[in-house]
Length: 107
Length: 122
Image 1 (spheres, each protein chain N blue to C red):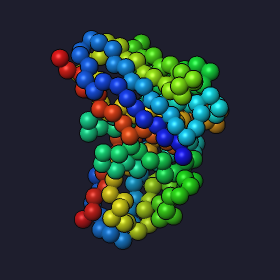
Image 2 (cartoon, rainbow over the protein chains, first blue to last red; image 1 turned 90 degrees about the vertical axis):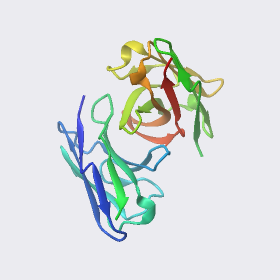
Image 3 (cartoon, rainbow over the protein chains, first blue to last red; image 1 turned 90 degrees about the horizontal axis):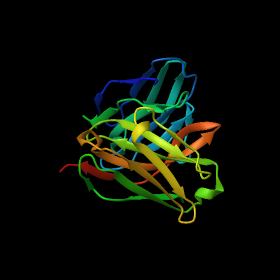
């Protein structure tokens, strides 16, 4: 299985801050990467697919980049409603695998 | 708007079989184009993909669970189901059903159920 490693595991930031999360794959996955947002007690929500494409209806303050083994997820200006855990997920190989998550909190 | 809803027992005894059903509304499983998946999340942990089924009945399971997993589909009821046998406490988790987007292979999960907690305990 392809291992996905996210950093940091947790992050505290202020409203309006630029927030960056990284995800590293254990092998080259091209751009076959998604990002999800999971709020407490809720199911994950797909935000970004193909590493950098925003899902319909997702605010433009969210963005993604990268290819190969290194990927970045950015929130350009943190909003209170962005408090959640964020996961990356690869789909280059079966089984699809997820990172361990990054828990984002407001400072 | 596609909606998914899990149902089934919230408590299962060790060594028994966990059985869950996902009912899909707002879209037809038999229309094809999607892989219908089960995903679980251990308490306070990350996400683990269990497997998927296509409307035709073809399946793919995570090798880590393959020997214990069966996923089936009932297109007449617009439902798909999960059976996980010989459960232990390590199978305690929130179980989600989800719609898998396809582009030759499964690429991501765009609609999810709300999840159901299954506890394995005597």
